[in-house]
Amino acid sequence: MKSTDGKFDTFRAVIHPWQCDVMGHMATRHYSPMFEDASYHLFSMMGVSGERDDGLGWADVRQEYEYLKEVRRGDLLLLQSYPVKLGSKSITYVHEMKDAESDDLKTRVTTISVRFDLKARSAVPIEDEIRQRIEANLLISALSE
Image (cartoon, rainbow, N blue to C red; front, side, top):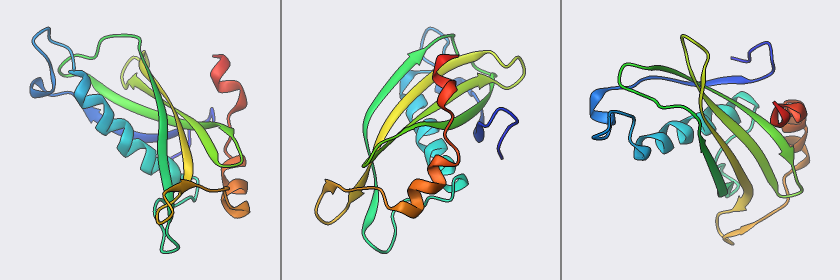
């Protein structure tokens, strides 16, 4: 689902005690799976598949995490995702992890993924049809917030 500000709702979670470290916040190892799942949903919502029969997929080449506020047991989370930049072979997109009740931003992850030839094991240009779908969803101003 796309929100009114152009961001896609890509993941929801509740944080369980077993996901927390000895200090009582969500352990860093539990963030990545949520963002990974959100990526699949983002691409699907834009009409862009993951691996296809033609041997093309996507490969994450960079991720930058910004831990802004603590996530604790019992927190209800909403991840919103959106693309912000499109290169000839890459897409840059952002996931925002928010408290679903207060809307407080907890964590932001910026990811760069390349279009990837699974057989040749190298980046390839993004096809025109996929490029158009991504361009239709770009949020250029989102990074300046």
